[in-house]
Image (cartoon, rainbow, N blue to C red; front, side, top):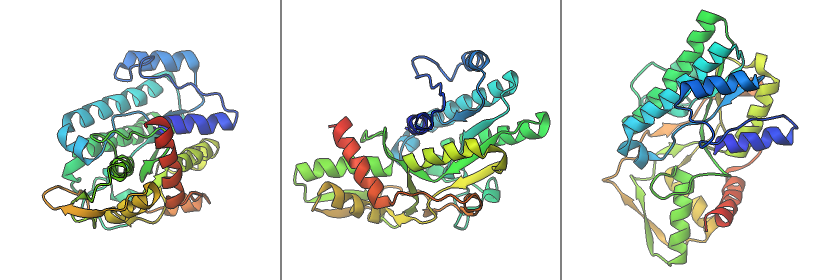
Length: 295
């Protein structure tokens, strides 16, 4: 999802992009990644590929989330190192932060405590790849960067009810519930957990700016909205957009993850950038995209 948004944003700025599909390039194959970089000699690599999913998918498949993301990430980093590609923007995740860290989450908090168990495999993989970038910089003099975005949603999202993240998954559920005139919809947990979401198109625009301002970027940097909402509030915002008029019930037997994940955006602010799209606007255009591509 992020990769397609980034490709669109770069193309709008007349940048030449190479973004092979999964069928064209298996990122689990290190030799294939290395060959691609040798052939195209990119000015900068933006690594946004990986296995992603919501809390259910992470709980059910921790091995897959750990192995695939660690392998793909390490292949990209090592291929950049071997081919002399000195500029790499690696995408991390707010899942990299310890579960008990105080909010907002500052970059120096990484590796200071245990990760959230419900997505530990994914978080460990993201931490490992970020550290590979730092180690390459220290040992080989590269200039690799890691951007750590808050949760993202938007165009090209995954709306599958079993594997989707919070907003696209809830959007699909409430759409069906509205069509069926359902009287109630379950929320996992008590709905108080707070999450920070940003429109993926805005993050793609920031990456374009990051490419232009590459040398000014810190080695690791959060990118986010600076504000968050409770899970229940997201349900209510989405319900208003899709026209769901029923009630919500809380399934307290289900996990809800970390109580809060709000990233500190001080370093982002130093670059003079803030996301232009409000959460309400982003939900509305994402729902329209859902209707056009999934229904």
